[in-house]
Picture 1 (cartoon, one colour):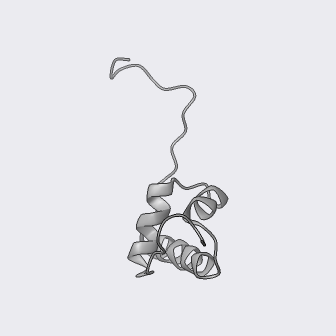
Picture 2: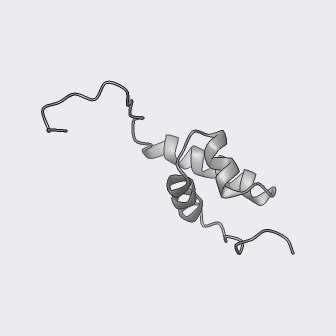
Picture 3: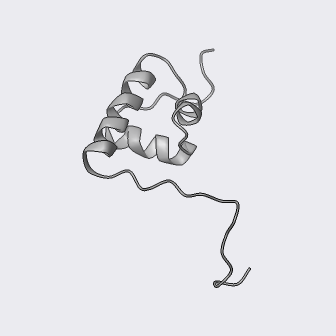
Length: 70
């Protein structure tokens, strides 16, 4: 696809900045602390896994190990 061809099927979300970003990070942190997985939080807020994880780290959440409970 050339750089002059418009994308017709993809829509982009505006970047989360400022207070909106801090609010979403707090909401994700609350959900994560309540036991939700990063993947579940990401899909519930229409964010990518990577973005949800980054926001959790910005909120200074200590991430759990991989694999769930054993």
